Image (cartoon, rainbow, N blue to C red; front, side, top):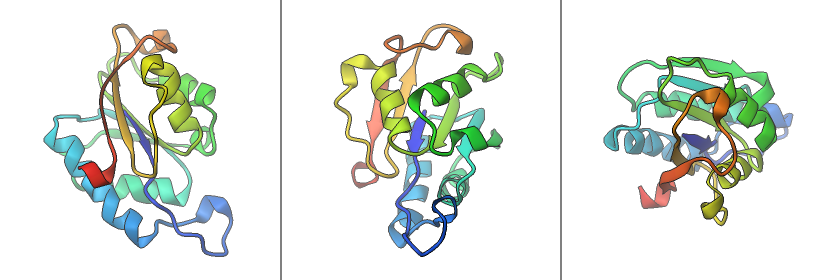
Length: 156
């Protein structure tokens, strides 16, 4: 699962410290409920260290069943699609479902490259793509996944 952080505010703080805006605080729990209701339960979460991604995760997590293992990963902050792909390839073999929470353009570029036939996806804030593939995490590669679900908060 790939999730772009919810809508952030633009106060006069460094980019990494930008918090969620009111709309983001409203949308993030909607995403969590949508994941739960559809049976998408991450076992592992990789979350950027930015304030807005951490806050997105906190609000999503409250709506999920279970307690996935969470890694707040500095490499995910502002990461390219390739860096995010490398992070996914590092997931433990026992993990069957993972959630990466990050930023654009990395998140949308990764979704587009993994599911090449869906490269036209519009990926606004709090959008989530659910992809599946056969194989182990180290084998994850562009064009080898299937997009099984995609939603934005307004459609949830």
